Length: 253
Image 1 (cartoon, one colour):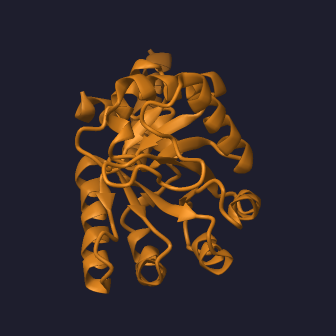
Image 2 (image 1 turned 180 degrees about the vertical axis):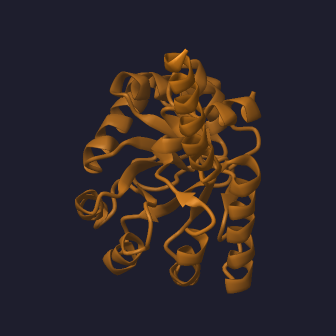
Image 3 (image 1 turned 180 degrees about the horizontal axis):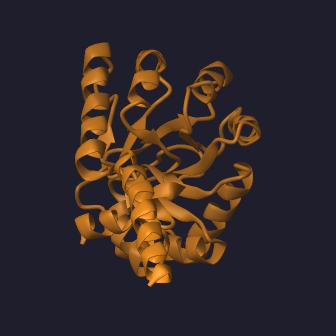
């Protein structure tokens, strides 16, 4: 009898410990800063932001490789920001992937671009409102990412993107952008978009927000991230894609 009483007491004690811990879990927000690689000063300002952000670095840029090295030294997660053909911009920049590109050429292009950005954990699309609608091209891309063990972030530059579903089909860890915080380059508009990302994370448990290294965007983030980090947990994108939270899978199913 004494053993059973002791066991019951231990269960009660551990229950009292575990419940507050679960209640203390905060929603998770992944904040991505795209388009790094053109300017060192802006890039270093991004890397100095508080909290674990994720940076998406463009290939073929003057300081992309160097910024990726800096980011790695600071423990910041890095993605290749892969240029892809857009509806009105067929060439999205150096290392671009074009519609109708031969699969072998496309794979070689991806490998070349990845080699330029060291310490990458994943890939996201730069532009790509045309290319991410092509299932065949996305399948080729995801096959290579699966082989390399990389994740994919669909920037969702078009509502018709099949990139995320292609990634899931290829068993590539993946997630999607929820909010662009600086579509309008106005301080108040950026603040409103950032708040909407935080609110979404609070409501759903997680969210992915993307911004760019514009002066206005960085000023807003420098000003507001400390307070935001009291409401949500800033996490790198990989936290939301691998392993994927069951809550996210339920929401997206």
